Length: 332
Image: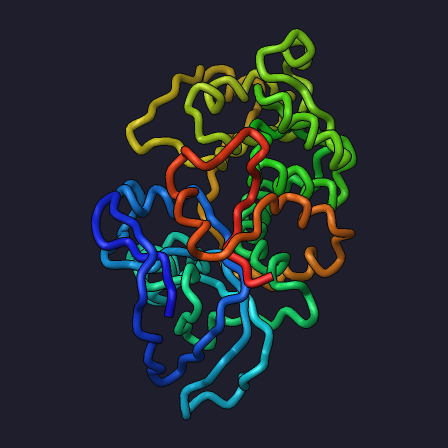
């Protein structure tokens, strides 16, 4: 089968690999759509957790069950599915508390086990979720959307009257659209990229240029503020835009050695909640429910649906343009 293959640190190529063998409790999924995430690039360069080589990347994927192991009775060939990539141990303190995304030995398809940038993927059946007639390229958004929903759920963001998201990339816009889908009507998105801001406006969001007078005039104006850029300076500055009693969410992935300075007195005096969020936590069904009810707005975030051999250049920044949003391997 054709697959994107990481063979070492920073080394990625298109390879012909053997189809995965079916272990007990597994299904063979024919991948129909798989989204590229910046985490995939971090995995390639050894900047993310317990990545291992050689590896087939890809943790945002959906497809068709091609075959099942003999002991599998609840899935059958032809079933249309999305994959939950996280593989927690189920035994550590975090798992026992229900925080499987914080598992001490967390593994994941596409990070430590072969994932979805291939024609076929072997997946434990308890990581499969039915997608009904949802298009595969839309269903492949379930994993990043589940990450967003995990973050929003941690901070009860849907109680906010208004919100500001820093970063008009795919994940920032997915968060902004999720806020609107859950009842927050007044959602602004800040970025320095004018084309992305125009795109955000076309999605019914309020665009505001980072560093502009318009944004400076909105200090302490937002009940909920989130960073989806991973830029430490943005994280540091977002407290200034958070209303008294409001919440600031660190959602973007900053470099592990990045540091910020925040005045503890301001957090205390203004009763600010500063919260973090990592990955998804068994909430793919919640994401699929939103995608089923979405009017196609979230699908607009997919700018490229490409065959495997055209995906490879996007693992470096050279292929992307300011108009590039979510890039997917897709059979169309």
